[in-house]
Picture 1 (cartoon, helix red, strand yellow):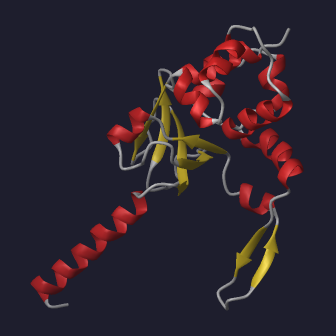
Picture 2: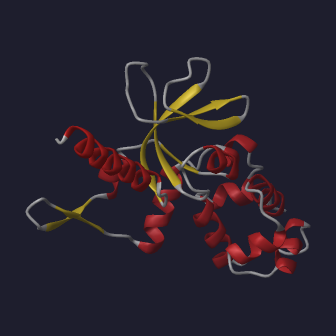
Picture 3: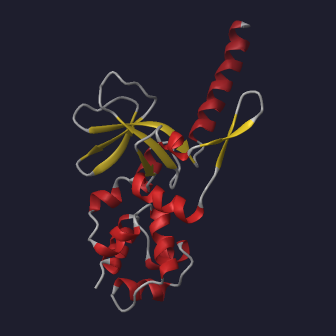
Length: 203
């Protein structure tokens, strides 16, 4: 017996997905998802790897132990999943230098810049400029003198965004964003303000 079906259902429910939506996400049909969740079938290795990789969960964890709500709702921990992912697809990245040259860059150099990633859920998407499904790269705040433009904080089992540290909660600095128009919008606002300043003050 594995915990795959139970964990699959928990992942789906926490992400707010119907069986049909989940099936479409990982290119399966709804009946297959139902059979997994009810324990009537076990996944093929390729399906297991696809689901584990998509949600950043180590394959061993998804089948061998019940996953906690905190693990699934708040963060995708990257260290274990990245090592598994790099072994499977061997991604390579090139660094573009200021003089136009490119050179290989180690994955660890990139991942050293942040501690966690967070997938923006519907709640945060409704209350901020971050789009649902965007990836926030987070650095754990250990000292209050650290500064960032925005913070993700956890309070009473819920994630929220603030532009200041919330003393009563656990805070994470947002050090990068992938898949959101947040910074595009910010730059557009700044450009409009600069134009307005030139019109008013002639600078």
